Length: 172
Picture 1 (cartoon, rainbow, N blue to C red):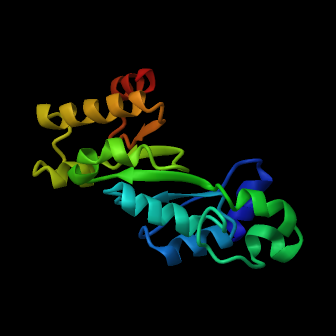
Picture 2: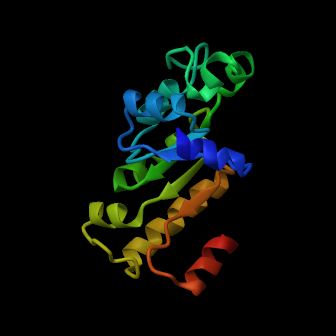
């Protein structure tokens, strides 16, 4: 909560990359004051829908309603009710199963963006760290094209500093 408070003082939305895409982790991060979450290892639309529901207060979701750091322990309860319906939601795409289900994942209501986890993705393809392989670049191209089709922002964890790759990703 103290980190979130400090980030907010700089007029920045605090995000939390939760440990697991589980109800408890979503609730803890958001109740502590995160404005959104980065959900790891999303592999299906059904899984992402569960995460979205765990992040939102009713009627959109199933997250428990109450006083917490997120609404300043009731001081901002009324204004927080709207925010609690749609926190920022970013899905980490880190497995080839997610790539195979990406079209459906990108259609989940409430999803704001995705970010690719290249190490886990490449490992799930049997080429751990093989970012220069044609197999991996083809999968990255398919992810980017699918995101363009759905007008979904797509981030890429650039593992090694590489200005050429950075410029390529920005242009994409």
